[in-house]
Amino acid sequence: MNAVAAQTIKADLFGGLAAGVVALPLALAFGVASGLGPAAGLYGAIAAGIVASIFGGTAIQITGPTGPMTLVMAGVVAANTSGAGVPDIGVMAGIVIFAGAFQILLGLFRAGSYIRYMPYPVISGFMSGIGLIIVIQQIFPFLGGVAPASDPFGILNQINQLHGNVNWNAVGLGGAAIAIAWILPRFTKAVPGSLAALIVLTAVAAIFRLNVHELGEMPSGLPHLTMPSFSLAKLGSMIGPAIQLGFLGSIDSLLTSLVADNLTKTRHNSNRELIGQGLGNVAAGLLGGIPGSGATTRTVVNIDAGGRTRLSGVVHGLFLLGVLLGGSSLVKFIPNAVLAGLLVLVGIGIIDYRGIGHILKVPKSDAFLMILVLLLTVFAGLIVAVTAGLILASFVFMKKLSDITELQTTLTPLHEQSWADEESIPEDLRNALFIKHVDGPLFFGFASQFLDLSRKLSGGKLLVFRMDRVSYVDQTGIYALQEALKELAAAGVRVVVVGISATHLDMLRNFQLVPRVVADEDIFATFGELKARLPAIVQRIRARPAAA
Image (tube, rainbow, N blue to C red; front, side, top):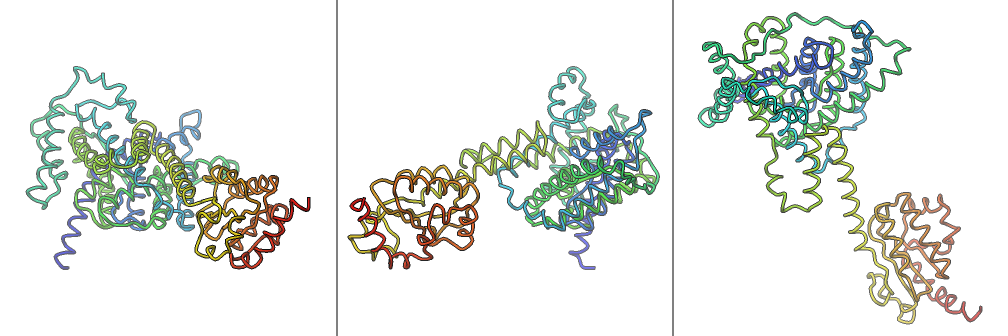
């Protein structure tokens, strides 16, 4: 084994151990919050963590139970719990397995590729929001208390409970953890600062018998295979929650993959990641665990401690398995304040300072979008934030695209402005023509501007629609074109269409614009064909009033 490989393995071991230590209390807490107990949280973290690391598309991603997934799972458990308070474990396992299977299908159908279209302001707001959530969630344990809620708004709303109840031993341990984890890497990278802080400060707390909250007793023993229940009577009620969990886990995981890409300057495989996450959740369901997804905090901890390959995720899962098999006797003494200090440092590090620093220099729409996603991430949840951000970003993009198309789309007499192939038209014909150059997509974002341009026509009897450069037409664009052509026909203006593609011409025929509004004889494949017939067309138009 060469030195580089040995160093990589060492870094992955440190990264996996650091992520495993951070994941341990979170897995236990999420298990309790789900209603299935702390063991279910550990089982899910072990199964999904190991399997997704091996088969996923993001080399250093750590998978396990997360807040959003746990909230949905808690609702599922509540809906499938008997009057005696006993949840139907078989149905729970079936729903988790269905969710994993749905994620596998998303990956096989290459749905993960669409994550590349996520605008940077959405990613920036999401990253900064996650960083703030991490910091807010550590306020109570850092100050020696127990958080009354897990959501940031609930924590901030009850922060007055800390008045006069600050445990200064906890504050000292948390502050020392931040100092060690931040300062030590500046002198040596032989041992990750976070791991060193964890070991040293746990020993200090034990030696001096400091009165601080500790992780406490852990569940132990190997998980048992859980047989899922797929009865037809409950199948309908299982599919809905499974799809919700699958979608939520997929979005959460792919966003975490983007965070990992940003921190490591690598590029993940979105579709493989969905397949890996799906396989991980299938494994979690078979072991009676709660479902998981890519966990941003644990992934960042892994990266920060040196993790660079899939081995780090496997080590994270094996560490949790080791806790089940006997390591709980040591882990239970870790002070919560030490973990809180390490997580505060992680949260501060994940905030997108570059994006925030440029907030006054970027377009106002991008700045507003980033701030909105940040606030929604913190106070409304990840899915709400991302959904709202994407919708708003889409509207902003369509507005910008329609503005550009409007600038490139002109309606002028031919003698004022022309394309190169129009310059050879004789002068006596040029004054009789108006020409509409449509340059770009004709879609719903440009429909109203298209109609406004068409209504500006006056003083001409022949209008030429140049559609050579129309790249895309949707249903709203077709309707706008139909309305414009009808108004022009009612005003006595003859319209000819030039350069329309075969695909777009088929659309006009399907919507009956051709031949009801524009005759077949007024459709020309090229402007050269129109020029050959232009004298006869203009002559008939000029003769029409006299004939009348």
